[in-house]
Image (cartoon, rainbow, N blue to C red):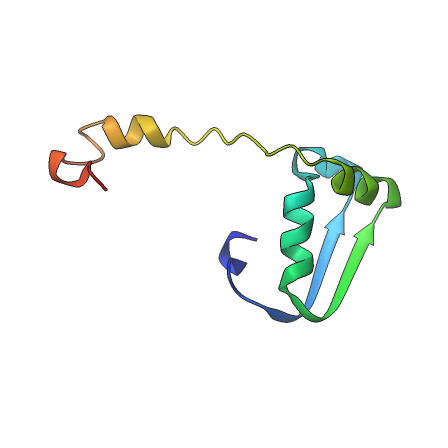
Length: 82
């Protein structure tokens, strides 16, 4: 979905399976739905869709971004203010 940020597509096909438990969040489902201009196809398990709809907690991302920003090997002092 990241590459689709801000874009729309005529058709979006989204697999929604219990095995995707770590990604069954309402905000990710909404992103897929909002990108479909004409047709949205959800493929998978109805219970997984219900789980995604009911899960409104924001997903905590472990990106190490703060560490990389403060690490001189990744960013010079001149870029740290960004």
